[in-house]
Length: 133
Image 1 (spheres, one colour):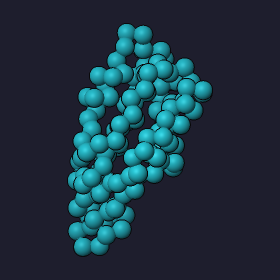
Image 2 (image 1 turned 120 degrees about the vertical axis):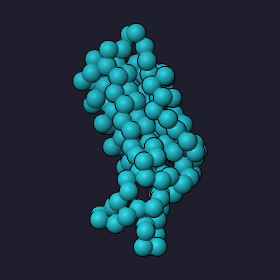
Image 3 (image 1 turned 30 degrees about the vertical axis):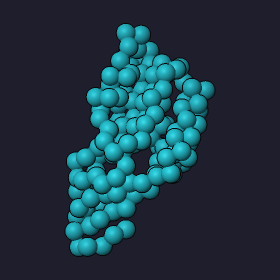
């Protein structure tokens, strides 16, 4: 399995798509998480993401190993943005390529769910009313 893991200021879907494309893969699934303009009926001005990069990368590599043990995946991408992100900006991209779509869908869902639970990337929310959470 080929893996691309990155944490940086700006990430793109195109970067993930370029990496996963392969004539051996009939199923390509891409999940893109973007910043919403609201949370629980409150207007969001921006989010700020930060992480301990070495630990975050290590945890993302663990997820990749778990995926490799469970599914026959050819390519996997995990990209996460850091810094200020505004409504509409991309915060996370997960991409999976496999011979068949079902495997790609299952693995992609597992990756994003596990990433959100285990990877030490923290976000602060800045609301229109001035409050920060």
